[in-house]
Figure 1 (spheres, rainbow, N blue to C red):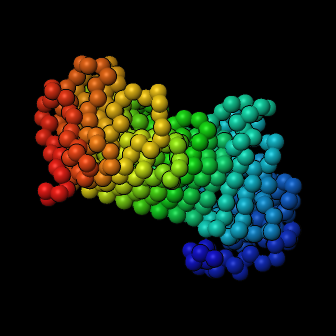
Figure 2: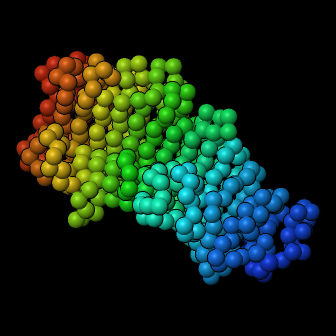
Figure 3: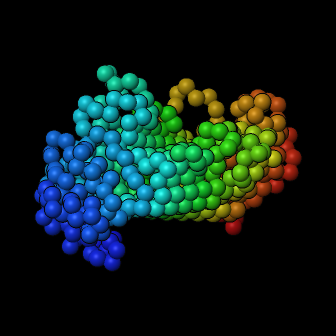
Length: 438
């Protein structure tokens, strides 16, 4: 058992309350009367065919802490609702399994917390699993919102050690809701999102979010198919004080990490996103995947702020190592510090006619920005076995110069990988140097 799985509940080791995993009306009454602080979900009964009623009753109880014990068979359930001021502990080996044939609603999620405060979920060695491939065909209505854990308008939520897989939407979803335009003070730590339909994690609107030591893998089903997608829906929403640290992105069909800011405006809260020591990669033989890190669509009247990539690595990605697209120099800044991009463009894309380079700055739509740019590279590295530019500016509109791009990229490749930044530039001071001369 993971050592954090033994963490005490209210100072009392949880294993002391996990004994007697059978229906116990007396224990349930003691929980209801407030004489027990820690409840065992099995006291409400366990049915290997459908344990929804028992598990929901435990979650609805006044117990400040609920243990979901390992029963030797899955906890088969339909959609469940979480509540405030509660600590949940799923024992190692627990599988919470979506009931076959259920989840017909387009937004039916396995667990939903709406307007909840002060919630902790620990699940080292536990798994939440849905039936993604069932939802992708009839009789299910096409949808992308059947989430594993949906957090809407929540405050002070911590999720640790949990694996969520094969959902009909995102593994983890964070948004506003219940009268709040954003969720705040959220921690996802030591979690895994695998084989989900839309994203491993979607962040629509959040303030003070930490995602740490997590893995996002094998997302496929419907675009964007990213490991993490940070993408607001309206200008009132926000992406503020967000840190993504020590995370891995593996074999996702879309971008490993995508930041898409088009709905935000000059009136929106400043964007602040810091991505530290993360790894994006595709396994040998994989024939899909997009960019390792993609940041885009911050318009001329887009939000202020800063997006930082610090000591991040992208290797053997399907497309670019880093892609910055439709981002105005006058909106949020992008800074990459000591990042490494290694041998990109491993996925065959025969219909793609654009540049296949490690770092791409691209303008696709002139109505979004007249001055693309606003990017700094601080001692970044490109390791590439192909004879091509390390960094290139591509203007599909043939209308705008590149503006305010600076810093240094060190390159090791067969032809020194000189940059292609166009003939019309302003405030561009980017040095691309060979590693052999440094």
